[in-house]
Figure 1 (cartoon, one colour):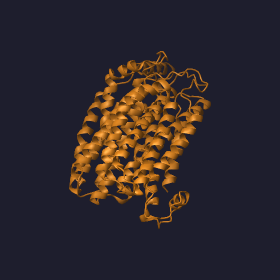
Figure 2: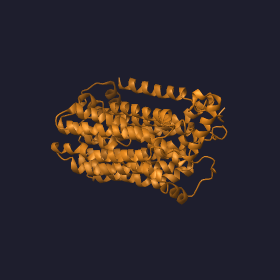
Figure 3: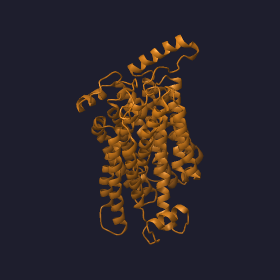
Figure 4: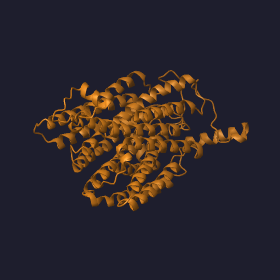
Length: 501
């Protein structure tokens, strides 16, 4: 049933992409662009499976909550720090090479984590937590190439008035990644767990026969790392064949996207010039603050709800069992609403929809606060609203606004800074919640810890409410003047000649 839902979601994404064509691109352009972003996005989605598989070890008690927090916080900190180097690097080499490096590097270190776990479970005397921390941190270093490479390619292929839709697609792929990370990883863990070897599901039988599992006393949890590694290698090969970094490389003429790089030279700036341009941009810094709060809020719910349910016994069974699928569906709804409303109602301004999403999270956290001791349904529903809203914020700000304000030339660096702030937030919440949430009674502090950061994100979203890049503002004014002359009833409609025929 879950696979059917995922297949329907992917079908919907692809259909929406081809239906949503406000600039009237040619069919050939639409197909070439699809073959560049879809493999890229699917690679990024499966990178989530190679990132959050660590949490599955904690829910299956292979490692403790405290150990999971230690390993994850170190990894997310490395991810955040790396982006200040990998962002300018991807701006120089292009998104295609960046994504292939991300996939292969993450695959290598997932294999190493699986090998260490294999040795540990077979009785080898080693410091499992230390080695997992080192290899997970290196995994996260290569993971840091993923989002920025996706946005780098997107910045060349999508006009600024199309990017709301792409932000929705990007959020959908993130949400599918969450589904792969939690539900697929949990399915692997259950299939290889000796406690459940008597279950004869099709998936369990396939894994057991493929890897020669004989139901011995050792659970093959190392496959939680090996299988995502294999999937990433496969997608890296697909990326190598299909992805084109820009319309120019695919045989089209120059395509002006009207972001902050409009009419600028295509010459690549130095590392220092690129970094300076980002850190002196007040809008990008405020986006970074919003992304810091989104990192706290997203992982503060996504990584902890199942542990809350397990510790307190107050989980909603359907939500807990299908946490990845619920997170995916709600995230897709949130990202599509954000992307559609940004382009349709706010003239490609991103902050208004982020502000609305932040306000809904404030309400959700208040509901969770009132229900934390007595209502599993209130906590579960609040958590799902949080997932829907925070993916909306992350997809529209990190996935879209950074490319708008950073421009094509600095898209990876700008996205890297925002994503870096997000991962600092993720690292911060791992440390703090790992220290706070000790014992069943401590969960009462969980929503209260998250609420101030939600208010902080809401404040900065309102500060950015009217902001768009200057080139975008000029483009919109020119289009509106043209529409007033041609057909006043269609004001706001995007017209204009494209170069993609």
